[in-house]
Length: 122
Length: 110
Image (cartoon, rainbow over all chains, first blue to last red; front, side):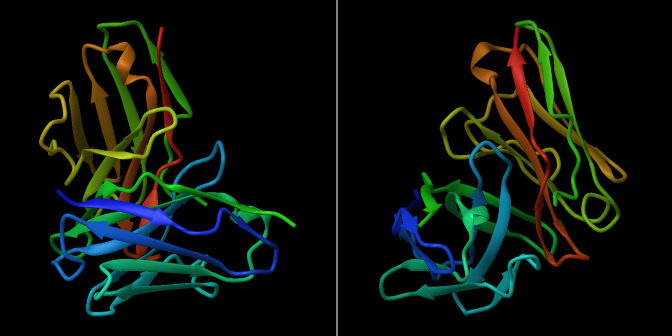
């Protein structure tokens, strides 16, 4: 079964760039699935960030689109996320998840990675 | 920012039934599939219901989902202490061209 593991720096300075990687095991990133990033600030709810298909097609949360970049590395079976110009409001647990899309508008996330806490602080 | 509205919390005694509502609009719930996720304390979210009312393999049939118009509901029957968690509805939003989550509901077993 597919397993996801997030990795990256746990501390990022304000105005810097947050960079995370999600390594996919037990399956191919080139399968017929999308790959998403979701975040959760401490004590708060879930927020979808972006998603990507192995072909390079992407969708972004409009509220974050100007600062976010998502990419895939097929050779490493990885999905990467970059979030620029971070502030303390970007402090959150960041999850990657595999998205199943049957037709447009029919999408769900399963499984999820364990998540990684990123703190924005000087 | 959430466009899907849920009650902040619900509570009920063991073995009882609870229902969590999720209110949206024609651009999300009214036109697309609704999914529900369970997040146990300190854990990653887990898919609980997909495509409005389908249960993933391994999920207890005490959980059920339904949808009507621009609202959806999650019901938990035979409430157990292990059901204490946060629950989120979610759907694709055509206007935002993105995935949206509900505000989340904390379930407490009295």
